[in-house]
Length: 155
Image 1 (spheres, rainbow, N blue to C red):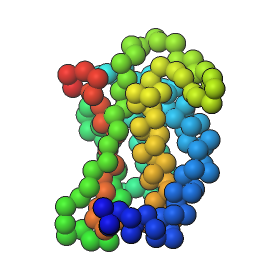
Image 2: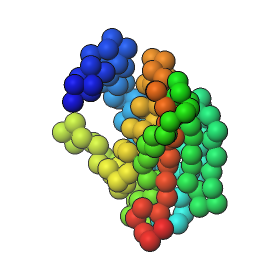
Image 3: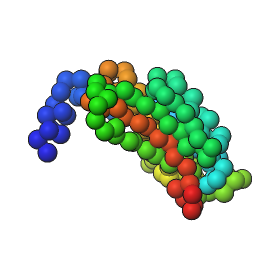
Image 4: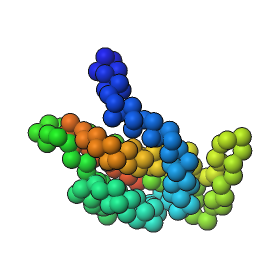
């Protein structure tokens, strides 16, 4: 646990964490934008399009998408000699095509089909990528960010 404390105390990390707090409204808006793209299991393609473009806009490298619509992007580490780290969030939702995706706000909370499962996970992953990029926090090893599909079904 000492290493986590040491990393958290680094000035660049402290500044990045503060930026995440300050940019919360922008992150919530991104989460809502993701949520508005239907992504029932086995029909995640349109949401994968959005994430693939976000990966490119955020400067990830080696971006690719497989035939199932899993989207991959790599943030290079300082050393490529070790194992890579994978950070993932699933694109699909349990809500079927044609679901009403209306978002409501109540008592400081955002509600809507697929917000928590898993637009918030995907949006948070994108916010972390942006934060690492903006503060030039290059990881020790490569980090592969993956927006995966089929989590809600037998995919």
